[in-house]
Length: 456
Image (cartoon, rainbow, N blue to C red; front, side, top):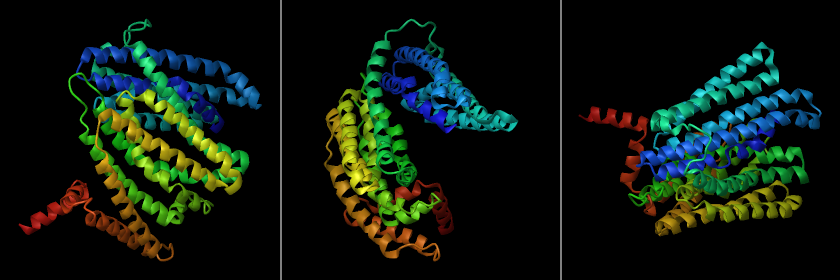
């Protein structure tokens, strides 16, 4: 099953070809023009269907030769199941249009239903004796349901005109395909960037070293969720429109918030990396050094998704292409030079340096396109760095011990207090802002409400 999934992962980019992100960009630009949105969606759906169906058919047809090449005849039908799943996944990727229309809750609904359907179908097929093939087709059923639901909800939201009536290209096809061409290069480069370290480590070191480096990446992916979530909510608002200029205030506010959030997350990575890797279970003790080594990447991955997605919606994908390619080249060069000499830490250096070019370069692209003043963001960066340093020092001072569990909440509390104190002293965070942030939390609202009722 893992092999079939890996093969499917190699062709997932070609099944989308950047069309989903391209369609979302043009839908956001013309959100006030229903006829134009419908035309973009119809042409986008047509391209998606033709491209995805072609990739699925080719992979199904090549399943036999691929299985023979691996010497595993039983691999044929799992590959075909994954190929069908790719078609459904490709349709689901058009859910990015929900974010462009400020209807993210619909995308959440399709994801939840897809996950539930895939789980039920996979378990049922495996239990009746389907084995690996059953698991692959369970995945296919889930994604087909998710894809169909995505199209249904899009048609319900935007009108049935979005469903193409023929295979003849429409007036928006060339624009969508041209922009998608830039995006697929970028996505391909970023996919290579995310896999290069593991490939080089595997080539020069060992599979055990691959596991030591790969384990912390699971935690880092989780730590990047806030940035990805904020990006999905803010980026579509920056799309250019003929009726009004982009509103940059949400972008600047999001950039500031992510710098603060990621600074405290990085502090915990630096201060408590041995404790964090214990969450992974197993023998990952050596991964603590890797996690610390990737701390700059953790910090930058907070606002990296924001600036890259904003650049997409601003129509700056062409400017992103050389940045993405240079990022891959830098990462590969440093990996090849350092991994043979200093091991997995060399891969950390390659990733940190490459992403230290990638994220700021995208911020510069956004700055030029929006003509914004980044000096406030620079001040926030300096202040959050000082606050993060104080929090890290407090974590190292208090330490942690699974034997003395009280040290963990004490250290976390001390780190957060130190972080907030430095932000307050430097003027980055005011008392009223802190109170507003606390009041936005459901638990805090209930506590404040109870206190208010008691005082009266």
